[in-house]
Length: 119
Length: 271
Image 1 (tube, rainbow over the protein chains, first blue to last red):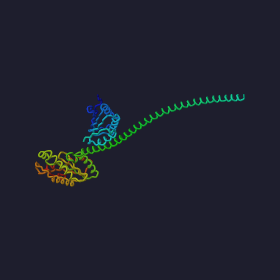
Image 2: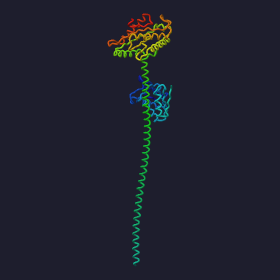
Image 3: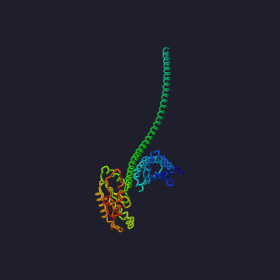
Image 4: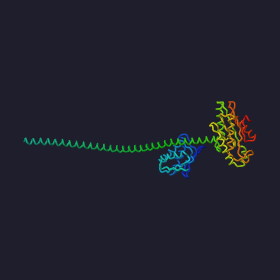
């Protein structure tokens, strides 16, 4: 199958999808202005989950994510839950303060979601 | 005959009764059928209505479940966003503090850097101008530091700079005094509300503090240990003068201290 939007890259952040490992990678400082600006990223994630029964989001190198960003991620988790039958894994780092706090909250939205923290 | 006539009348009356009863019976039967049909229809309608209501109730329950679930989701999302905002705010604050520290402090010696020195000097210069109080600048240079590095290597050289920086920093106690790493082996101090005499005392204390460190310096031609040359410039700041001109003056005095044989303090009145 062919994945259309594979990469979104700017000076501050980059996001790309690796079909072989069914993993979306997030890096840098993601501080977009409002939900509308997050739509292309949401579209990338949504089209990626169409391709596989398991999906990983690697956030280890995402140092900052603003409130609209965590909101987008929350809605994505709800969307995955509603679709059912998708094993979602969020990969974070214990070194990044926001991840240690916010990712656990996302698990409350989808208890079957797996959190993997690396130190 | 009368009897027969009576009997006829009786028969006729009975026949009439029979007809009446037949009419009555058929009327009642028809009426019953009608009511039964109506009841049947009503019953059908009721059953249909029950099905519709049950469906509506099921739909409402499903809707209620969806709304409850969405409400729960929203509560979690709101809480996530709020907590996320706080934690990111905290993260930015730490980042800002770290950036401020990096911008103002020398990474090797952990004392103020030149940027911090310039800012502090400008601020104190203005303050002393308002107060018309003295302000002094000390420029200190480690004697024969190039030779020290050549003899002991850069790692030891860095260690020497750290020790000297710490010792100079500990010499100052007033919160408005500041010593900074000004260049390679050069340190500068700002002393507000301090005239030449006070500044000279501080310079002597600094020399003594360095002497107490007893850092061996085999390639120094003046002393077996590390020594300092210091230029001291003092003034009461005036609007037509810039703080940098006082730094230049201290630099010239430091140059004289070097020329006069190093390991000494030179101030304007002695120059």
